[in-house]
Image 1 (cartoon, helix red, strand yellow):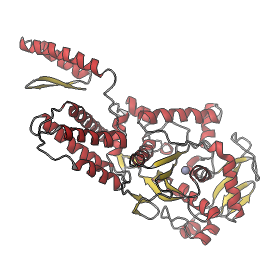
Image 2 (spheres, protein in one colour; image 1 turned 180 degrees about the vertical axis):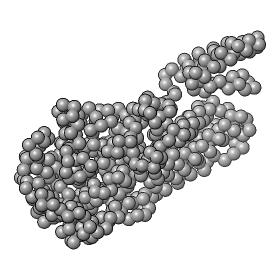
Image 3 (cartoon, helix red, strand yellow; image 1 turned 90 degrees about the vertical axis):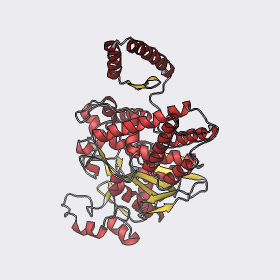
Image 4 (spheres, helix red, strand yellow; image 1 turned 120 degrees about the vertical axis):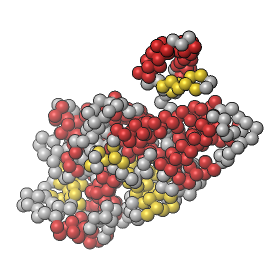
Length: 487
Ligand SMILES: [Zn+2]
């Protein structure tokens, strides 16, 4: 097994990954709240943890990857007040809430499939685990860290922190300041402290999604689902809990508190968080109204987009940055990602056609280990990409007959590219479809006609062919041995 270092948000340092159970990994990642189309901000955690899932599997672990669907309990502004996000959408569109959740779950899956994000091992719904959530709330109440107020149940943050002294540790918030500086609660509030969070909410008469419980007919708080479902499917203590940095507080902080309150320990060994995608330096998000949906990227149909970007361009764009760095959206950056992605795919194609030599004039055996070293260093995908670019350069040099490789070395390069570009980073060659042979044949015919026109000094025809191909996105390159093309 490769010695994998991952950055643990809880300890603020890179740690050697050692699973709870040898050879097995249990990993939980917070999935989407399904009340709108997935946007670029959703693509990042999905791709980040997809790469982790793929890599852990590649190095030999048996991985159980759980990523939930939040279809109930997530209120507006991530707060304890306001309307349920899905119920609100259902009311606005006059639909059954589950119809809204199903519709956007289907669309989320379709977008993720296009991004080549593998489906998790288990994808549980919050609404399908109400009983488990009620049981969790009961345990927390029995331990004395929650109180009932007017049919709702709240987590007692002050009492919890006095006992465990770790509320705020994950997100770096100072709880004493939170408790003393939060605004005074008005007489209407059911909570003892503003910092307290809901474990169960009594449903108001117009609230559609509701279940019976010992306290009231209502619905669970947003943070209980991940604690309940993580424990159910991955056990009392699992390996990795992941999500976006924006979920660190209050969501993950509260998950830790819930687990400590009922069991005396946290849910997992390692907490991993991907950074945000910004747009003009501001977080991209649905609640901020400055987001671009994935479908809009794929079609180019948005005022901020200068062109359409394929799913693999988006995936490559995200992988070009380390997952803990911020990424700022711009058309220039996406165009650069498109070029980089195409360069790699082109190099892989060139590699298939290289003529082997009796001996190699260059060394290739270090590439594989360099890629492993980068992945083992907290999933450093930008460094893996830079090694793949070095390989692409070498492949082109050999293709230009300025260096030689044996068949064994050509096979080694193929193996490294297939492992790291395709299997681990999850890229796929969008241009290679079943039509490849047909397109090649047609292009050969067109380029032969153009060569004939040129031989006859019929420049008008040869230019017309080149320009028409250019308009279709096909670049013709004239070389010593005739013309070649690139899609
Ligand atoms: Zn969660």
